[in-house]
Length: 442
Ligand code: SF4
Ligand code: SF4
Image 1: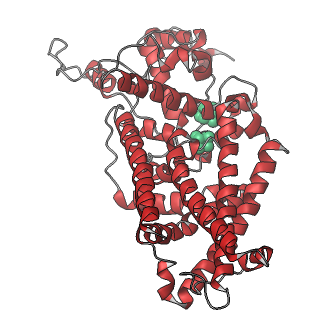
Image 2: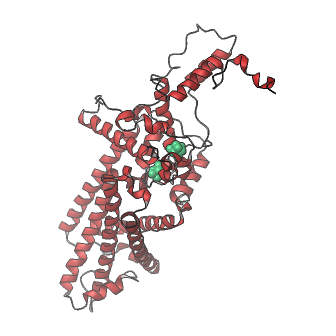
């Protein structure tokens, strides 16, 4: 490698990491549009969740086939990318396999990368078949049409190209390492249990041509990795990074426990307290500006982080009783809509010099309809099933809260029940004095 190559490589690296950093800043800015919520408690439990669920994939493997394949791709992704560090150093300083001084340990590393690369290729082919040939129900439902479907496939093509380039790079490298009398700086380094067989393809090919193929595979491989890195922001594959904070900051309370609104609790307590002064001035911040959520900035930042973390796997929708019985609700769509709307708000802010200009749209109605919200049984099956601890239900509940408390727009039976509670102290349409009538029946 000459100095021009080193400089070109440095420029490529700066562009790739620079654009990624810009998007990470945008991502953090968008998540911070959410309301504050304190998730700094029970740190031990949070670290444990992160290690078990994000790193250990413990919820993924509940569905063994998909879970096992996902673990292969995930481990392959993490481990093979250790080699990226070597590629970066080689690229910047013109060295050849700079970590080869580790001797037999290096051989084991390169050998295991190669075996993982083949396993990843096999897993990716099976994933492709499940999505596009067998067409599993959760991958062909209406909320996954268009870009989400393409996104799922694009990443599979990416993996195939990256793994193939990796093996081709190694095969040509192996070939050049074994040129009688040596070839340029290609000294023997690494063990190649797979690509040594691929290198047989280059028997009889001039060394100069093999060198060009090696360089092309090397450059395309690292360029592909940088493109992949920058693609993440626009893809559901952002979960590769966000699964970690998402599982750390997830709700630790029992699933059935819902948060009461402080302002409402205070109001009820005052009603029940005979000594309370009804004319006492309430603290200025006692009543929120808006009850519930009609748009993304009414949600808290963990809910917005959830939206960016969603892998669009559809496990939640596949167990949702409302969806299974033909209702319009899909918890996956709730998360995808929240992310889409958040992105729209973020772009509005970018276009207007850092200020959001109202666009006559909201998450409620323009993305998620009341019909979807009221179809939810609040059973928590979606939350239980989610492999990265996302809670579509918490968004549904906040939006319902808005419908009830700000718009009095609950469905008729619910409105009737609330009126009964208000008038009769019970959900039924009986006068309180008639409550014990059943006792008089024979
Ligand atoms: S909590 Fe609601 S959205 Fe989630 S599975 Fe149950 S019914 Fe479906
Ligand atoms: S919310 Fe969870 S289970 Fe549902 S699609 Fe997203 S990642 Fe999958």
